[in-house]
Amino acid sequence: MNTENTVRPRTDDDLTACAEALAEVHRHDGYPVNWPENPGDWLTRAAGLGAWVAVLDGRIAGHVALDRGDEDDLAPGLWGDTAATAVVSRLFVAPEARGHGVGVRLMERAVAEARRRDLHPVLDVVASDSGAVALYERLGWRLLATVEQRWSPEQTVTVRCYAAPAAV
Image 1: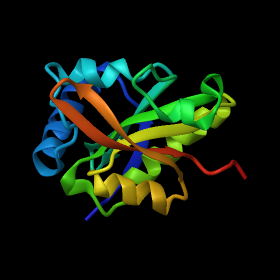
Image 2: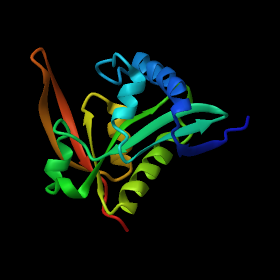
Image 3: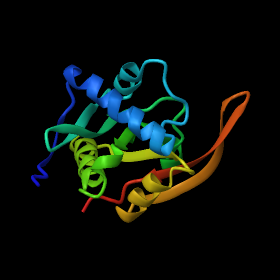
Image 4: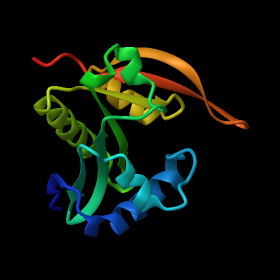
């Protein structure tokens, strides 16, 4: 079986396939915790510095975005210099594409772009997303803090905040 695995910039033409893959991830893992009314808008909102897709065997297998972050992102403030950070977000890998290095390649691409812009990559992740937590820790990301974050009057979640390892 050919397992061609490439990462390329996301285009508007990819959004339907990305939303379909995201729906599979949501059914399988519960990410995102709160399903967005418009998944395409949700994906594009966090891509101010770039967004990439992984393609495995000709199909969208994953996604990652990079942005400057907003007031809801905790990791930039914990890093200590919000102006010097870029937030990695909207990372997901379709369940059937796991085990092929897709998540690692997407993270490498987002980190490379942040570093190209002289920004330090950081991210927030819901603590219950054990697969993502394991990936970040395997890649050497440093836990900055674990905090409770109120997303609405009815919803409080535990969030783990990470910073990428120092550039070599």
